[in-house]
Length: 324
Image 1 (tube, rainbow, N blue to C red):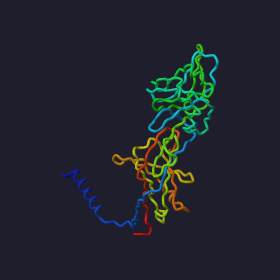
Image 2: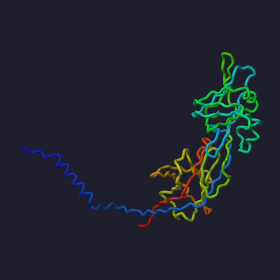
Image 3: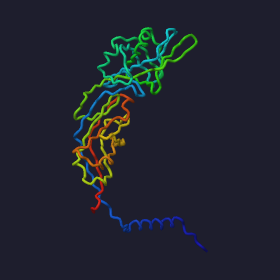
């Protein structure tokens, strides 16, 4: 009589054969290549802070956020002589705050650059035309007589008791809604921008800050003599920073020719890091003693905030071709 061989014994024999095969020495004909690593501390850097034109962004900002303060300026098509009421319509996700409307006292241009010192020449900040409590995401605010008396000339400025962000005409334009009898129609926004206070000096030595709303950019200088002589075999060139918190916006690195370099953010334990891949940059030839790298927000006009970097270093890994 034929006896069946139990399946569990078949599995046991296969397992023994696999284990014995893994213990055998095999020659593959490939010799491993030594890999070297090095960490270069970046101790030469500074941060610049500069005003930039803000009329081309997708958002407008008003109010106070940390050390920043901002006014939004808007101008519209002229309101007709005859109307029952006029409202301003904004597109925003913010709620539960108070808006203040101010008179603009002089001509301004959407594509021009304005600094905080220009506020006094453009806006009557001492007089509030009207206030309005915002309790919905997309408020429609009825303008009072004082606002209507001045808005046709140079537009109107908005400030708030806390930070407020709303869409510009490039994204989802603010508009005036004219109510006349049973009819309503809209007046388009002809121009808008925001003016934000720069709370920093123009040049910050020994500081690594990056931000939006204004141009806040760190500049770093990598010593060429700290790099391996043969850079064709670089497997990793990571410009690494420790962050006080994960970034709320995209950050890029670029060289003096304007070439951009990608980054990756990650967290180890409770610490956040960002690393820029500079492999293609370091494979170039350099005539200077230092390699100038600048960091910046990918879109400086998408928000108002600042982030601090710590512990800047360059992590290198390369193959030692020809060495055993």
